[in-house]
Length: 158
Ligand SMILES: Nc1c(C(=O)O)ncn1[C@@H]1O[C@H](COP(=O)(O)O)[C@@H](O)[C@H]1O
Image 1 (cartoon, rainbow, N blue to C red):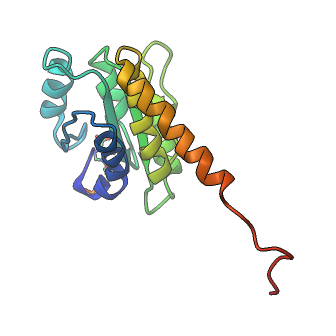
Image 2 (image 1 turned 90 degrees about the vertical axis):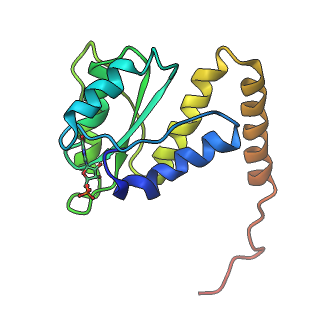
């Protein structure tokens, strides 16, 4: 993530990875504030054994795109909600990549971070059957929760 202030959002991705038993690391890396660290982080990511990178940033969110420019690992970009423009700036900064350097961009904020975690699990599940089975179970739990939901009979007086 670009800043410690992104943690609350990115924690939703962390919780997904934890719940699926996926090993992960968390780092604050910024294209703007720590460009040298970003260079070495992205350039050494594959050789260090990383398989997917989730990059969350807000505002002028160059982190996911610059990371993708320096690694061929899949990069998932999470637009963190900004104060000034509610994350629209983050979303557009991340999603509008030039052809040739893809960033898989998810929705703004917590739901996006959660989905980034799930997308990373799906990518890893291509080669790990156990993760694929866990993903199936996760979907079933979600489905059952929706099917068990009941609405108040006759509505609620307002
Ligand atoms: N967008 C970027 C990058 C980057 O793209 O490299 N580095 C930090 N930031 C973002 O600046 C916002 C405000 O950061 P501070 O709260 O630290 O001022 C954060 O959402 C961060 O992701």
